[in-house]
Image (cartoon, rainbow, N blue to C red):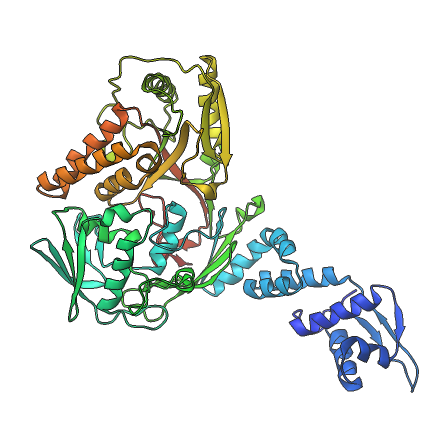
Length: 573
């Protein structure tokens, strides 16, 4: 048996010595002389003797030195090296030293073993992390996209809003736009003028200057990314002293709202460069209340930024762990469920989102005819109406903004499809769609299934796929995000042909010119969604919810319309 003398922790160097001993002798009791030990350790007699005594006092070996010159010593290892390593990893994890555990596991090529065992230890870890004011946040997805320009999934939002800031912010309570990185702004002659705060620093220590803003948005306007079309009205960006001036080509009542969107967040870019280095992008350097301290596929850490200009977070660190292990559900302060399973509707905290599931008709070489689409829409709507529930309530439009408008399909000629229908959806969404597929089967509709990893969403377009099952989630600024969805959603990108995209864009720009303000513009914009529905491009299905297991020790957990918490508002009891 191992003794409990001293601290249970062992250094990486001493653990390496144990591995050398185990490789040489295994668990078979052996008699060894000093020459053997110095050959194994590649060290002097004195250091070899010292090492053996340390390992003995730690309880990792049984060691009886031989008495007298030339007498051999008795050595045995009560446990295998893997058992000893596993004990060390458990000690470290349960003491809140998760990073050290990963260093050890990586060094001895036991990363997979640690990932397997980690969920079993996290419950004890949570207690230790709470003492250190560290949040333990469990998710089922890998490290999300951390570049504001490229993030398309709601799983990125908590990370982005903690690490980055925007020039201005949308106030949900008043509907007004407030200064943030810019402490003052005004509009004149199709120009927006922003004066920056003097006390803002990036996580790398550089002070935010107007040149950073210009470089950041110049790069946005010339680089291909999912939101590029939203910046189409920027003619040029000018700097005058501490002011940044955006010159617009035409009237755009959404532009100020665009700057509040997290996809318009200010990220670090060297003003002397015309391109962001991959290293800068991967480091996710912003000005937010938290910096990205550590990042791996299944583990990332956010650390409180001490030089934040505003009211910073109350939590010192947030440890994010990705695992599918069921025992991890109760281990974290927060467990975010995705994908959602039927049992989650009863056993988890439900948060109603401004979210909508849709089926979208793909544009490819052999698409379904408009009559076939109309027949499918008619039947699918019948199903959605019949299966209307509080959790999956019927949707008449993409968001609640126009939910009271009834759903009408004015396409009178319909034709039942004669070929198999190909549907693409993400792994984990099967249970939501199975009742619908069973319903269509009653009418003789055969479905071909294309299931992809959740990380592959949103879709990039695929020949042969007739329908995409998508879900859109919207934040607090619904009016702007309605416009954003119309021009950057999957429907615009993969369901419309080139001519249809041009027509929709012309329509949007025209009503912008005609609108008196943003509210007037949003009321008119519904005609764009109605055009998509009447031309059988997509079907709104049902609203969606987010599901969490949340510890009673966590406070300040107010959710936004996306079902996302703000890390800066959370605190541990």
